[in-house]
Image (cartoon, rainbow, N blue to C red; front, side):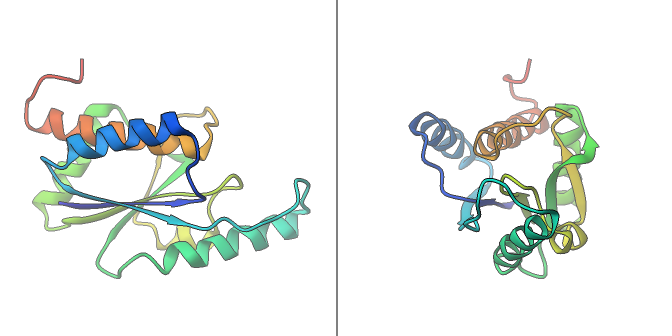
Length: 159
């Protein structure tokens, strides 16, 4: 399986970089993992609604430029479907079984994802109602993908 994680903004925190590197290394035994960062749109701290839409649109264009037509796109969104780790693992396994070997997850910037990205997405996934920094979400996502592969192979880890 080829898994792409597309994110907005550059990761700067050393502890997050190290954690993501560790899980990416572990995942190499199960899948090809590619991390893609697109630049975030520079904007003032306080934005009007129209300016927020414009920022998300520009970031969305950068995201969609990285998504191939044959990719199953999963958008991380607070209003997406919540799943247990086992349900998440089952969903990845189902994608692989039915020929969807190219999967991309997309994590938006601090304002979220554009309508265009959400429309292109095949599904929306939520890791809960809590708001997490998008940089931290990268680590949470890569750990859950690793956990899913371990669950699907019946290997110890997830409990």
